[in-house]
Image 1: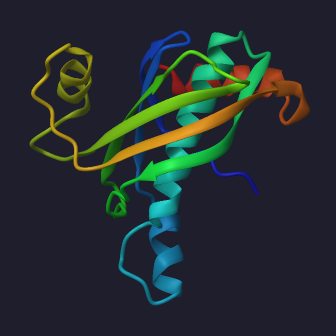
Image 2: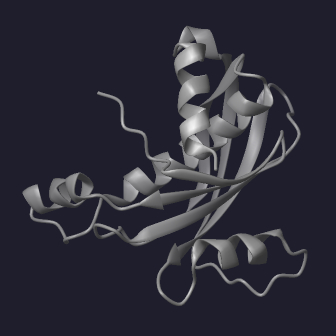
Amino acid sequence: MRWCLVDRVVFFQPWAKITIIKRGTFEEYRLMKCWGGPNLGPPLFLLESAFQAAAWLVQASSDFEMTLRPFEVERFDTPPGLAPGEGLLWHVTAAPMTGGLMDFTASSIRLNGAMDAAKAVTEFSRPNGTLTTSDGLLFKGVLTPLADLYRPDYQRALWRELNC
């Protein structure tokens, strides 16, 4: 089973930045409830959604020849899980590759009535934006041929659906 934890790509700059929306689903919500946890989606799904955003950045930037495999997480300030319908906006930035690894930073904000996705994307793109985030993520990844893991034509088709 393969989970797609990116619901929409709202900003993309090749080899530099990607901003995605991750929405909480009923299925994710039910996973935690089964184990007696809070009525929220698993926080590790949020980490995986940031990894998937970085992988989409690499895939689309390389014309679907390469993808990213997470190698090491240096920091993960866990955002709270999402209830069904709640959203999280991840903004992932790539640094130039060094020593065969690519460094990424990611920050996120919750989407609610006070902060819609369009406003959040605008704030993220401003050099001195007023947006404050409560969590952060630093991780490294290894570039891998996409065809070793997935069908490039499938990924290309899915990218067209996710990218607005």
